Length: 125
Image (cartoon, rainbow, N blue to C red; front, side):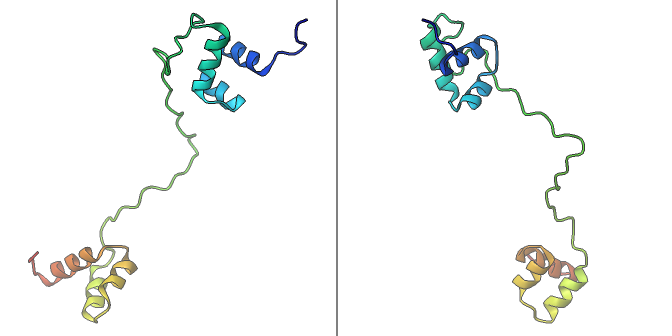
């Protein structure tokens, strides 16, 4: 007697035969891509249109679609320059901690020293 409803494995093989993407089948049924290929090979046999090799010859994963036009992603932070080198030099001259000056202005300690050297006119490394 035939089953009233197709089993899970039968649905996977049927979807594979209908040309659904293997990644989608695997995700829907909680399996890996390798498990889907193994199931199809077991149920249909090695001549079932696939070689059992993963990934099959000619298989490629398409790139993800671009984000929608209204999608907002913040730009990567880039130091464009110092808003006010005079402030950095003044804080350095008042004896503030160099690490605190750097943190306050979002720059590195080396950049603080560079600003101070440039302002003072000392080009020594």
